[in-house]
Image 1 (cartoon, helix red, strand yellow):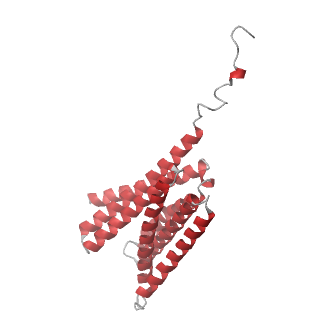
Image 2 (image 1 turned 90 degrees about the horizontal axis):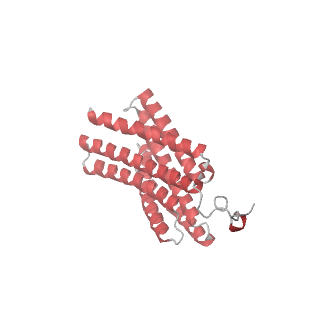
Length: 249
């Protein structure tokens, strides 16, 4: 009983943090600077804080409607993460068009390869083709996102002009992927175990909170750095020629 209450508490805390981050991006106008992140957070709030709870409360946890809703939206969120990683890659390579052209081709090839592998892996399951294809496709796409995000973080650390905000945004995605990886590992290593299911739920909720907390830190710190005046700003320190000379008017 306590475990379920704790998981629900973390879940609702996550809802609140998602909405706060979305509101912060809107109020401070940061959605114009990081449009890709704003679109992803908006979709995440709609799916995680509105659509899923609504379907769950109306149809119930064990209903077919909720199962379809959960897995389809899970694929949508993973696709959104894939597109977000692509946008981060573009941001890193914006000064090098040839590099971005190569990276864009690589991302497109990875996506097509995932779809083909998922299809042929499940082509014999005609009776449950839709549900099995969705789950297999989501898992393959998730694994690709995990690898690409790790590669992106390494590339960011190697660049001469490292963007601290972007590094934290990529790190936040990595935390979320770590939670999903831990959840999948626990469920596969101990199938049917109730304790494993509880631990997997805890890992997913904590890492979800970690992602949004990291993103919120990245956005707020960047905003503070933009608003805090520099000591070298001519608006704060008068020029020598404008300084009053003692004894004169």
